[in-house]
Structures are given as structure tokens and as C-alpha cells.
Length: 168
Image 1 (tube, one colour):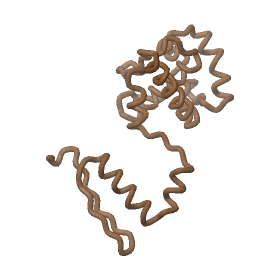
Image 2: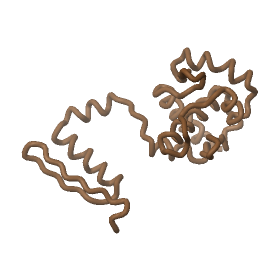
Image 3: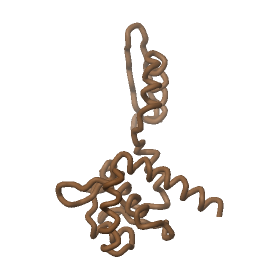
């Protein structure tokens, strides 16, 4: 393996020392195991805390959402409800923004209509319910972004949707 894409970590915690080198994902996993051994409460905290995993979320969106310079495109899920399509579109925007592929992680009602294929009136009718449920947040610019709860629920939706497709 050459130095491109290689991560080197040196960690000291009291008497414990660790040197790791290699693929980013493998080094991260080994580092996490090491830290949970020297600080066991970290495992408890990790089990109680939900933090969206950007890599895992990107993989789950594969085959459902594609990112373009104009924003996310819903390529699968014709039979999904408007609310589920809206959440998928907003998760796509969030992931695209975090990956540096999109300029923003928010979408306007008009953009949501374009991405979901639903009438703007349908989108506008759904947004207050999504906001009230805490799945979506309206920004100061009048656009919408997915919340952490919205990401969690959408991850569950994606898993159910993919399982349904695989069983058909």
C-alpha cells in the first residue's frame, strides 16, 4: 500500500500506547477498539448515542438517491409516500453537503417538488407535519433540512424499502 489513503495514528493514554497505520476505515476500527478497552464507559456512551454514520448512510442511499451539481435526484421509490420521498431528498441533500458534493444541505419547497416528483402543493401540505414531528426543520432562509431524528427515521425507511425490494 502506498502512502495515498493511508492513515497513521500514535496514541498515548497513561501507560497505554498505540501505533496504527493503514487504511482509514481499518485504523479507525482498531482505534475505537483500543479506546473502548482503556475507557470502557465509552462503549456505554456509544450505545446510548445516535450519530449518523456518513459512510454507512451514503452506502444505504446508493440505488435510491444520486447526487448531481443541481442537487439530489430520487432514482428509486416511485411507490413511496410524499413524506418519505421528502425525507429521502433531504437526507440526500445533507449527505451531499457533508461530502462536499453539494453547496448546501437544505432544499426549498420547489426543489423538493422537483426531486420527489410531487406537486408543490403536496410538498407544502406535508412540511408542517414533518416539522411538527421533529423530522425536518425550517431554516431562516425558508428552506428545509433534515434533523438527526429525521435521518434516523429515514435510515429505518431505507432499510425497510431495500428489504421489500429484495424480497420481491
